[in-house]
Length: 435
Image (cartoon, rainbow, N blue to C red; front, side, top):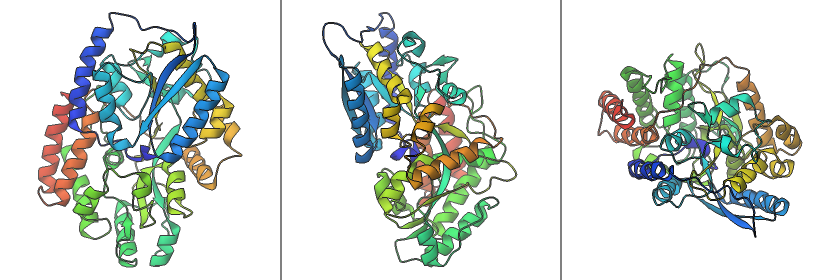
């Protein structure tokens, strides 16, 4: 992100507000939203997203191009840091004040669609052209067979590495075709030992996204196709045990430093400030992290990918339209412009992932920075792999990432043992998804 790297650690209160939003949305279903895209004068639509100042700058440039092409539509941008984005959105939806075009990620499109808060995009098919989108990207935005989200681009988990930190610590870069999680822990500890105080081998301990990958590498999955938890309590215990090992060995920051960095922007992460050798994050963060750190960073494949890959491709973000929008056709025209127009693609490039429209990928390929090219090459590499299917989390699953982060902090602070943490995680997560 731009903080798509760790979508997001939602507070439980967001889920409560979202439940209220669902009730309002169901009530709203009794009346059809306006499909106005023009009329007697310009209409105004609101467009929300999260991210840093660089993302805001390029998005506003793309908006200006859209407004020039559609003088009857005015776009009001609404953006902020990831840390408060989904809390604010839940409040807006509950108050029937949602933006017209809403950027979402992870399980949020399914969460909001299942509660009736998002527009079925088939209703605006005359203004929203999805014919150029990759089939996999289209399917990522579907909930129960209906299209609710439009992928902004492809993304995958990766290890971002800073070769300069490796070199300064006297540690060689790993062979990422075969390294294990044990190798990762050893290398990270060696980097910390060979670096100045405050610089670590890995910028974070384990994240919720890495739990998903960890489960997949163990032949399990975070969720099953029918919306159940798909991983065992023993796998969760191993995850928390490994997280504690990284922190206790000094490979990663201690508990207090970890908590301090939970909700910071990309630029403020240890990788962004040049104080980490590695960071597990999303591939489209490479450009922002490279710019922030001033270093030539590179992407490595996840440890532990043999014999069973845990990696998967997913959409970096989705553009969705509020079910209560009064200007659904205008909103659809904006979304269509952002994913199908060459001028928009050349402005946005790989900021929101590698474009899901092949024509747009061709349009930007000669414009990408070395970091952007690196991200594209990584996605191409992942795209050739044979990996297990990914299932979108059920309603309530957006709370599980917060549960993971909170319990992980308790493990690092020694308030819970990994065994106790695993049992609590299973209990709370099952309660969150109502299964």
